[in-house]
Image (cartoon, rainbow, N blue to C red; front, top):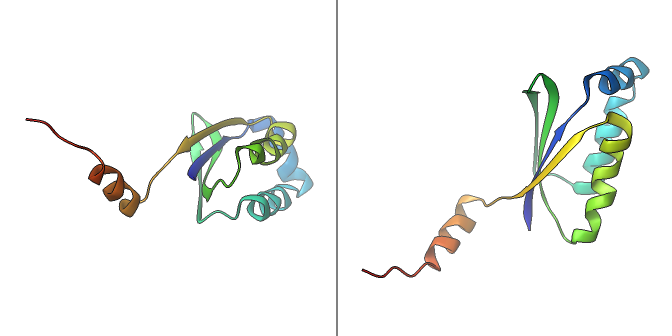
Length: 99
């Protein structure tokens, strides 16, 4: 299932990892685990925030994906199932309308 993972990083914890030169390594580890089709970084709610779009094969993979962000960045994590345009069209095709 295609998922959106939002990682809102704690400022102090992410500052420490940046000073240590470890943020890039953490992100590379995350990319290796989830193989995102896209990843974007911005600021949200005054915090460094990453958005990762990836295919979740097993729900049992969620702890391995989330815990490094929790433990090393004090991050707030949010998952949402998402669709691309083809999947949306397929889903809409399954709707039956009644007049």
